[in-house]
Amino acid sequence: MCTHDNMDLDQKTILLDKKANGKIQPWKEKKTANVSYFELLEILQFKKAERVSNCGEILEFDITQEGRMKLANAWFCKSPLCPMCNWRKTMKRSIQTTKIVEEVIRQKPKARWIFLTITVKNVFDGEALDKSLKAMAEGFRRLMLYKKVKQNMVGFMRSTEVTVNKKDGSYNQHMHVLMCVESAYFNTKGAYLSQVDWTSLWKKAMKLDYVPVVHIEAVKNKKRNKKKEVTAIQAAVQETAKYSVKDSDYLTGNLANDLEVVKDLEEGLYRKRMFSYGGLLKEIHKQLNLDDIEDGDLVRVDDEDSDVEEKAYSIVAQWNWKAQNYFIR
Image 1 (cartoon, rainbow, N blue to C red):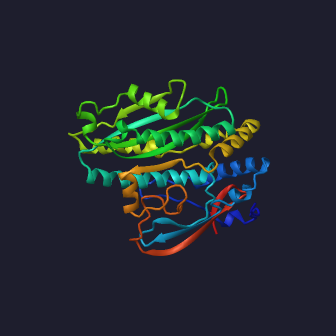
Image 2: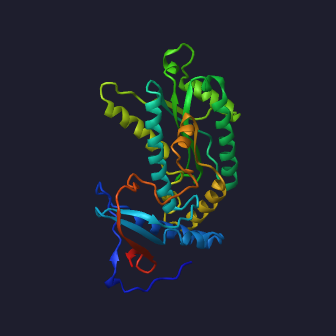
Image 3: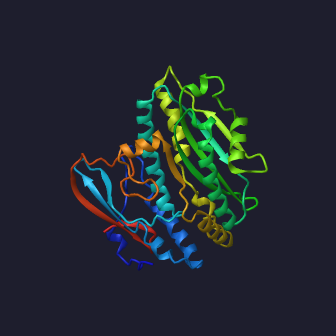
């Protein structure tokens, strides 16, 4: 772990990263949660604990001529449960997917969007979670290859989310899938798939002996108000791009419980790809030269990463372990 800072706090300025829209970036909150996560890993004797503790410890910002702050350099651990990294990944997913969806709409203006949520039975430990997530990834691959699904599919984005059931401590693993389909899906006889159809296909793809919970809905087009149409699609993008695991599920303050949950989630999420694109969305991701959404750069992730504005100077903020905050050094 990094050494604790003994700087004279009276002579230091607290980091305040305020965006153009007035929103203050939650660096302190995310690093505080990261520290709590690190402490759990340390108790569990995970080798990566020290690496996690160093995540986002030093932040270098460029200050533009217009006075805006842009993160220029930082090191992030990319651990699947790290609150700091997951915050950055979520922003990155949202911005990248928004750009991709806008391009899909430009190329396929008559295409429609549907939002699918698919799940399986809850599990109770890390080993079972590991097996279930692997099975879901394979089941989803089979689902996308079925003729009834494939025939009108333009492309999709898929995210896997794991939540903790507070009542019984079980884990619920499910997928959110934003799909773009040809207009023929809705207006050609035999092409449309009802919720019963999707449920049956998912059950078949997963080779289940029970009826899984499946929800399907169309992302409504608002022909009279284009702004609302974009808002409806953007809402679906945000739902799909959200956190794979919420840190509130394993940072509850109940030490024994949090240790057990972190141990299970670390085992279950190990080497899992929680987010992916397919079809035209995957092609456009490549065309736009966007980097890997899971393992890529976590420094430039937001809408204010343009290099158009000229840099005036740079500042460096460092996490102070004693004061539990970032200070400009």
